[in-house]
Image (tube, rainbow, N blue to C red; front, top):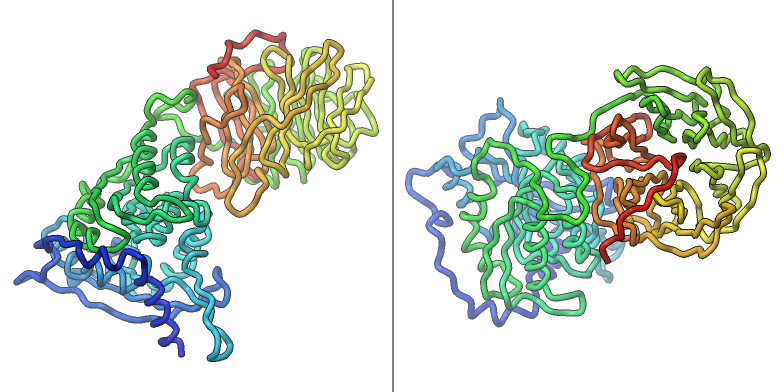
Length: 578
C-alpha cells in the first residue's frame, strides 16, 4: 500500500500547467551529465523507509548515493536533495557527482535524496495527507530539525557524515528549493551551501517574506545558487520569476555570495538539469575554504562592526534579565528565579551584588546614582545604594520592567495591562494601555515619548510624555517581525541610541527600529543560541557595547552606535529620514 501511495505522490510532483511548454524546451546535454569512461561510478542505495517524530504520522522514503571514493573512516560531505530519487534522477545527480568528484571539482560527497512525508489513510477509499507543502513551503526550523535530529543521525549509522556546516549542501526545486533555503537560513550552523531551482519564494506559506528578511537580518554565512526561467508560474500565490529576481536583488544587497542562471523556461526541471554540473561546481568552489557572511550595501542603519561578534560574559544561570549600565561603567543583571543581582566589572569579573532581590526582573540606574529594581515577586519598586542597601520606593506595585528618567520611574504592569508613572517620593499615576502584555520600555533621547513593548503583539506602543510625566496619544507604532509559528513578537526589553533608534529584544533577535518605527536591521542571536534575548542595554566607556541576556547566559557585542541613558538629561536627536 505504501508504495502505491508514493506513486500517487510522484504524480502530484510532476503534473503542472507547464507540461506542454516543457515539451518545446530544448537544452544541450552537459558533458558532465553523461557517463564518462574510466570514471568511478558510485552506487545508489534504497529506498529506505522512515517514520518521523517531528512530523508525526508521516512516512517517507529516502535514497543514498555513495561515491566510489568514499572512505568510511573519514566524515563525508553531504548533499541533501528534496523530492527524493525522482528529483535526483531528473538532475542526473549520480552521474554528475561521479564526474565532478573524479575531477576534484567537488569533494567526496554522500547524496541523501529524501521524499516529503505523507500520512497514509486508514482505508483504501481515501487519499493520504500530502505533507509536501507543509514541510517545504512553511518557514521556521521544523524541517531543518527533522534533518538534523532524525535523518542525518540515521544515515550516520551507515556512513560517517561531517558535522561541519561548510561540508553540507542542500538542494531542491520549486517548493523543495524554498525548503532548502529555509533549512540553511534557520540553521547556518548546519547547512551553508544552497542550490535553488524554480524556487517558490511566493505567498503559499510565507516564502514571499524572504527578500525583506534577507535585507533586514544580519547577513548569514550562506552561499546560494539560483535558477529560474521567465515563463515560470504566475498564479494566485505570486509570480515565481519576479520572486526569484527579488531574491537575487535582496541577496546581492545583503552581501551574500550568490550566483544565478536565468532562462526562458517554465516550471520544470529541464533547464536545471542542463546546468546542474556548473551549479554544483560553483556551490563547492574553493572547497575546503569556509563560506563566510558578507556585508550589506549602504544600509540606512548599521550598528554592526566587522570583526566584532557576540562574546560570552556569564553563564550557568537560570533566567537572566534586566541588564543595566552603572555610572561607574559596570553592568548589572538579574537571575530572576534565583532572586540574585549580579555585577560585571570593567575587567569582566562577575560577582553577586544582591543575594535576595525579591524576584527582580527589571533594573536601571537613576539620576541619583542608585540602582532601581522592579521586584516582580514582591510587587515593589526599590532602589539600592552602592553598598547594596535596599530602600522601598513604591509598595503594592505589580511590575515587570522599568525605565528611570529625571522626572521619575515608568514601569509596566502586564497582568493589569498598565503602565505606571511614579515619582521618586512614591506618588503614582496608572495608565491603562492596549498592550496584551506590556513588557520592556524606553524613552526617546529628548524624553518626549515613551516606547513600550507588547510581547503578545507585533507592535510596540508609543506615548507622548507630558511635563508632569503623564502619558497621552497612545499609538501602535513600531512594526516588528514575528516568527512563522506565532503572531506574537515576544518583544521584551528595549534600549535607545542617541539618534533615536530603538532596539527591541524579540523572539527572532534584536530588532533595530528607526525613529519612525520601522525595522531596519535584525541582529542575529549568538552562535548556537536558538532563542531570542530577553533584554539589552548599552554600556562601556562610550556606550558602544550592547549587553544582552539570553536565558541562562549573558553576552556582549561592540557596535557602531552610542546608547542613550534615560536617567540623564534629554538631548535633541536629529530629524529622521522619512
